[in-house]
Amino acid sequence: MSGEAPRLSADFRSEPTGPTGPAARADADGRRPGDLLVRAGGIVFVIGALATLVTFVPFFIGTEPFPPTAYFVSMLMGAGFALAGAGLLRAVFDQRRHTRTTAQS
Image (cartoon, rainbow, N blue to C red):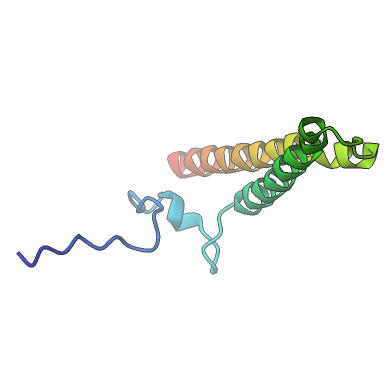
């Protein structure tokens, strides 16, 4: 008992539960269907969230509001959420399709 905390692995994804586990369908670089859409959606969401915060600042400090283009960038928050949702749905559909094909074999 050296008092050290247990070390966690760098990869927090769940381990495959067998030959049909989620990691069994990963590409050579470790990506699964929908991963790229979820990442892109997260980045777009963060950009939109930051733009939303920035567009509200003039209202609190009493200056002139930003032009409409700034409010358009704020709408990226919803677009990012939709992209991430599409990536999640793609992953779900791929997993269902893969499960269906392995069950038929």
